[in-house]
Image 1 (cartoon, helix red, strand yellow):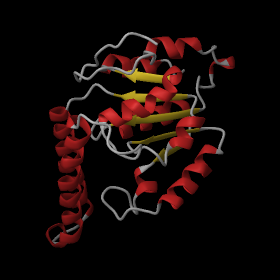
Image 2 (cartoon, one colour; image 1 turned 30 degrees about the vertical axis):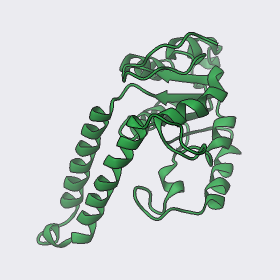
Image 3 (cartoon, one colour; image 1 turned 30 degrees about the horizontal axis):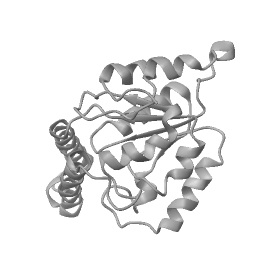
Image 4 (tube, one colour; image 1 turned 90 degrees about the vertical axis):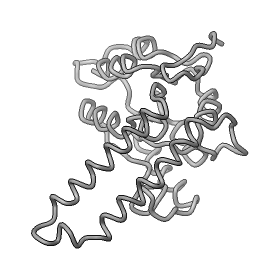
Length: 226
């Protein structure tokens, strides 16, 4: 087990996890220069940590099929109604059985089989709660403006249902981010989503976790995908 270090967000690191430099470097170079070094990548982190953005970059760079697990957790993603656990497990099982994929999400427990199957788990752990809230607010404003631009004429001002959905998403995301970043305990089970619970869950996979403690770690991982 490695010594305990601290991430840029001020939290202790998981002992034994790899840096973006060391784990990617351990993989043999791709033959022909075209195959990415990993075929199954799982990205995890708190709200506003950049999971979706990183997953899109990884998919574009590697050609891996991309799965946003929010859409498996809830109907329509975001703050939609929660789907039954059995349905979530069945859907993640279908992803797991594919030979190539990149998946991103925050949840624990029902995502275990994806973590088991992943060749590498990327943990985004360099964002503080204030930074996360700032990112969430920017995402909310960007989404609201995009929603308005899609409408024409007076419809920009009459689509109250769409705008209220954006507001509900914001009101749900900020408390969720607070719970993730500021809760000190690990909860009552592996489905409790906090930073501490995530660290505990990832300790089982420490040999294949890339712990991104800074933006430099993240960019290093992305650059070495090819």
